[in-house]
Amino acid sequence: MIRVRFAPSPTGFLHIGNVRTALFNYLFVKNNGGKFILRIEDTDKERSKKEYINQIYDDLKWLGITWDEGPDSEGEYGPYLQSERFALYISIARKLMTEGKAYYCYCTEEELELRRKAQLAEGQSTRYDNYCRNLTLEKIQQFEREGRQPSIRFKMPDGQLTVKDIIRGDVEFDASLIGDFIIIRPDGKATFHLAVCVDDGMMKISHVIRGEDHFSNTPRHVAIFEACGFQVPQFAHIPLTMGPGGEPLSKRFGAMSITEYRRMGYLPYALCNYMALLGWSSGTDEEIFSFDELQKKFSLKRVSRSAAIFDRTKMDWVGGEHIRRLSDSDYVKLSMQHILQEKIVDKAVFTIRPEWYEKVLLIFKEYIHCFDELKERLQLFSDEIEFDTIEPLKGENAKLILSELAKILKQTEKLDEDNFDKVLKELKKRVKVKGKELFLPLRIALTGKEHGPELKQLVILLGKNNCLKRIEQAVRVVDTKEDKGDGTQTV
Ligand code: GLU
Image 1 (spheres, protein in one colour):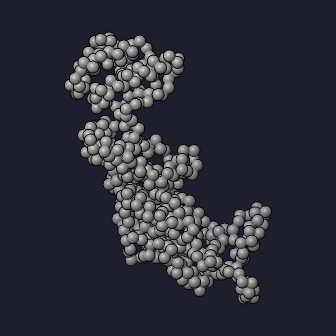
Image 2 (cartoon, protein in one colour):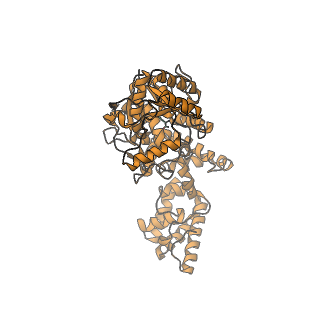
Image 3 (cartoon, helix red, strand yellow):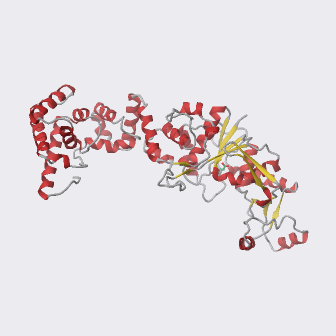
């Protein structure tokens, strides 16, 4: 039976880098059948916080990553919070001691440090020199009398250790180069190495899919699994996600919390789609997948061995593609929810004309990558607009276009689907200008921007009076700038 686990340490919010590990585990298990276990590795009391644990539950659920066993849905291998499993670790460590596979180590931090320095001075790699492996009874009694609190060290076996990794293949390690390592600290707490192996072993984890940063720990883990008599799981170490310059993910590049992306209104399955592409490819040119498709297509065999580079532009592209795939009614529902929740539009204002908002929101469906971008887009409909440039408004033609349009609009009852074309035809006739020379000044005067949704849609939604106000604003701005001899500026 395939059993995988995601084992986050609740010392911070989930971000793209660590949630991707959860996603790969989830997709693997959905693709192959089996169980997904959520285990919270909260052994670091100082840094672990309840608030982070709750956020992990929320973020995973929001992404659609659900678990079969975990702290809030106990299964037969619980508890699933490491802080509730301390006694178990101690009993396994004692068993290892009884079997001669672990021993008390009395070395103090200072002594260890001195010996490390000596190793460095001799150009050796630093590792524990197994000093306490074979202490005489007298030495032990002496240390006890001195009141030293021992830790428990695991005896690394001699010889070669093979780590079988689905992504990296078989990798050989010389176990003797690793040195015996601590499994229980002097304060009685288990270290990560012991806790993770006891848990994986007792929870019958068949596949350990985790970040490559743990790869160097794996020979230690294989040795512990074997010493405890647990089945050694299959490993798959997934390459890390890096920033664009190859640096570790930082707040600037992708390490923004999932909660933050969620607040920004990215679609959860768009994020899953993008995260899957960080290291995995379908083997075709296709890159946009629904969550269901990902589950059907995912395979660890197609996970690359090189680091994945976080690319926000690509993430936005994936986000936008998923928005485009929404039905219009789902899009309207979700975007309305977002603008109200984030107070981009005041509820009272919205309630006066929801149908108008519906139309307005729809014209941006083609352009946005996440719903928060509607904030900027909706500024097109605010009372005063900002001009990205006024250059195209300066020539004589532009002035003529604006003044003639104002005249025509004043004589028009209202602007709608039908008479917009008439207005335009009349304008062309009067100013004898067409193409870009006509449309660019119009677009800038009416929206402040050089690009954007189709002008006709915008103008109709703005309505006659707003269009007139904008023409006035544009003329005023150009006149002011020309008087001062300024270049382009925003108002
Ligand atoms: N708690 C570890 C971490 O967050 C995960 C350990 C593992 O996956 O084996 O890095």
